[in-house]
Image 1 (cartoon, helix red, strand yellow):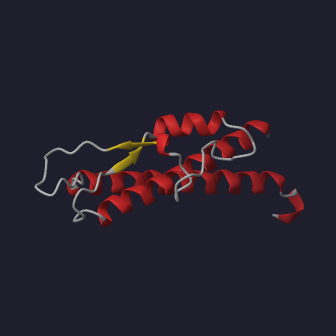
Image 2 (cartoon, rainbow, N blue to C red):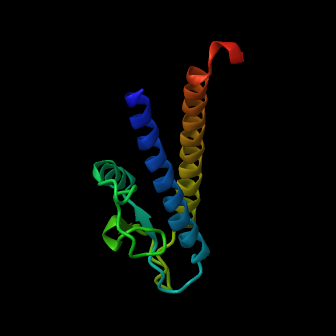
Image 3 (cartoon, rainbow, N blue to C red):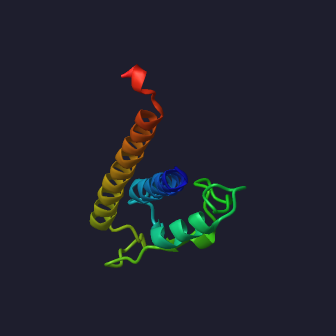
Amino acid sequence: MQRMIQSLEFQSQALMLRSQRQQILASNIANADTPGYLARDMDFKRALEAATAGSGANPAGLGSTDGAGLDAADLVYARASQDGLDNNQVDMERERHTWAENALKYEATLRFINSQSRALMDAMRSPNQG
């Protein structure tokens, strides 16, 4: 039982981080035409390690200095594949690919949480309830 709860906690933190990453990527896409905009991303592995090693006071284990609940140190600048004339660092192909990949992983994590929750509810149901 404890192992299942720990797994659910881990998956819920991963889900929250995936959601925050979607916001960051959406911001990059929205600013694709903003001169001088520097695309940002999250080092997901590092953020998840920090979240799972964090204290109970902050469930994500992250700071909250920026709107997405991340410290500036938790974000990295995405590298531009080609310099634009307006110094915009958004590579739309990369951003769309990363956004779609993150959305797919978000959905997979959500399905995993739902199936684990259903399994836990079925295990708690008495034999008389069917």
